[in-house]
Length: 75
Image (cartoon, rainbow, N blue to C red; front, side, top):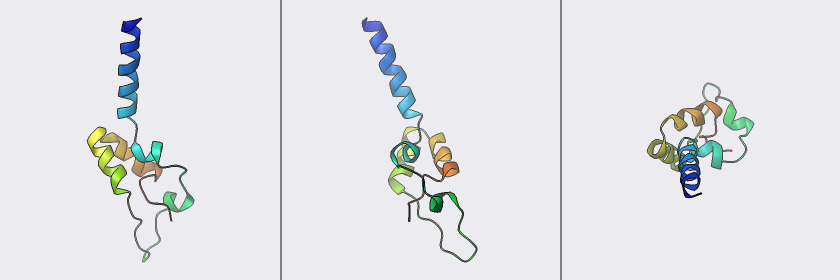
């Protein structure tokens, strides 16, 4: 019993550390976050807390956040 509990905890900890923070905690991704700004328009702002958490916990999570657009602040 104790051994399976420890394995479950380790598996859950690994899964949580490999997830991308903005995708998991950021909520629904809006159309504004998905589309690139047109030439001459201001750049989208990045959620700095999510970026820092991605870099500290598991840096490939930042790649997932940028690809999905979840790292950008909603309008």
